Structure formats: structure tokens, C-alpha cells
Image (cartoon, rainbow, N blue to C red; front, top):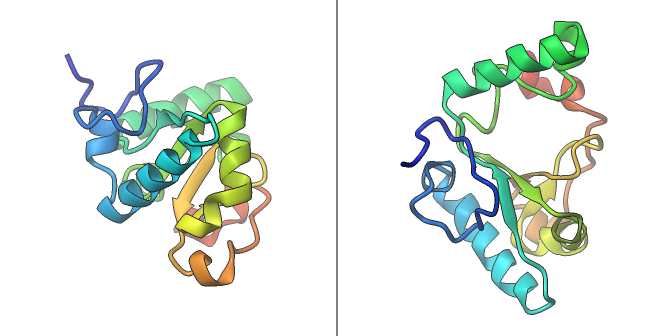
Length: 151
């Protein structure tokens, strides 16, 4: 049974169409991600999806868990956004597993418009189409520095 909240089982690749965390991603992000994964496979690198689209309820759960773990909303906000601000809820972000895949994306992602957004989250990537020509923008220290998270 598929998890309609956006939770991702271990070992899901970016080509597993039936997984809601992938199926509900922005189509342009998914296309860029799959093209990058196809090219990375030529270097022996596999993109595993740790997270993609998330339901608002699941995002709220993750935030509650982070508050419990980190002891305050302020500290949790360095790692988990609210449902209202999370690019995961809108389908505009993915978290990629395995260090070799994130290292590959760090080096080659801009070619596909895939950019790391936060210094403290090397696994978190979003589509920035302008990066294809201009390179990825500077990263934020963490999500608390991202104006989108302060809405």
C-alpha cells in the first residue's frame, strides 16, 4: 500500500512512478531530477529519494517531532519548515540519499538546474532553472535565513 502522506520507504529511486512523494512533485523538478539521475548512473551513482512531496499533515508531524527533538520551535526551524512554507508540501523540493549522490549533485546539479539550498542540509535540492546558465545561487546557512520560511 502506498503512503499518501509522502513518506518514502527505504530504497525508493527517483524512477519509482507509483510513489506519491515522486508523483506529486513539480513536473519540471521531476524531469530535471530524472535526467540528472540518468547521467549520474553513467558514473555509477544511484539517486535514492529520502523525501519529496509531503502532505501538510505529514509536514506538521515532522515539525512536531523536530520541536520535541531539538527542544524549541526556533531550533527545529533550522531543520523543518511549517506546512505553510515547506517547499516539500508544494512539491518543489527533494531530499536525496547517499553521500555519493549528493556529492555528484553538488558538482553537476547546476547543469540540470538542481541546487543545494541550505548549508546544513546537503541532501536538500530544489529546481533553479536559471542555474543552467548562471550557476546555483549562494546557499543559506539554514532555513531560518530563507525569507520563504518566514511567511
